[in-house]
Length: 214
Ligand code: Z5A
Image 1 (cartoon, rainbow, N blue to C red):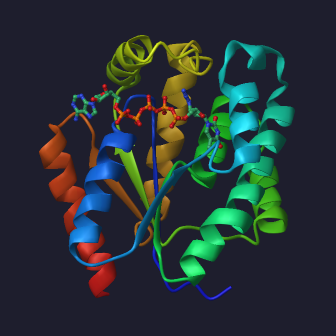
Image 2 (image 1 turned 135 degrees about the vertical axis):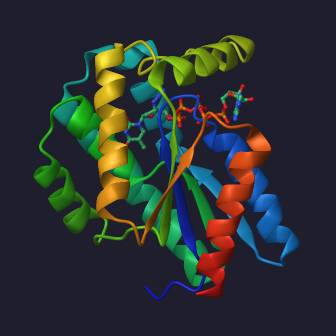
């Protein structure tokens, strides 16, 4: 596959503002004349929607971490082959709410599945395909969880299985995101997500405009 569009993933803790920022960035890129697809994981395909329900609602409480990892990757294989790769090949930019770094952080650092196994799985199942840029929205878990809780209750959503895990879990996830950015400065970008929405958007826009000009 020879991608003609750019692939940009957003990761970060709960309530970090990914969806908000993806919409703002999509509008910015469209104003620049780009074709943009916004999508998310899990759940970016019809099959993935079914996995999302199994994974994120209380129905998913019984999954073993390894089984959960395999389901997240199954969702990604379907998403990558049916949605992301065809869009990139057609020259569309893809903005994706979560991708493989979330598996490394949640199932790996958070739940103890070996990072080496998750990386190997990504190599074998997803052709080791990584975004041109991963934007990590960093937020202290207590702040993000409070935002997320408000949104879930406003939308009457029951997708709160990860929100219910303890602060220790969310601290480990956050540390994994921060480590990734430290080790991959060329392909990742860290933003302080406690800032106001427009300040965060300005920072992201600056980095993404640089990516397109490179
Ligand atoms: N997961 C996993 O474990 N492994 C994997 O491999 C993958 C996923 C792919 C679903 O992800 C879950 O899947 C996730 C990890 C797991 N854990 N959980 N839960 P998700 O991305 O669908 O769910 P989320 O992380 O909880 O996203 P979210 O709550 O939808 O948050 P968000 O998209 O980052 O934020 P938002 O919806 O844009 O904003 C949340 C609220 O805050 C909303 O009311 C906004 O108006 C408000 N907001 C946004 N920005 C700001 C600022 N700057 N200030 C104040 N308020 C703000």
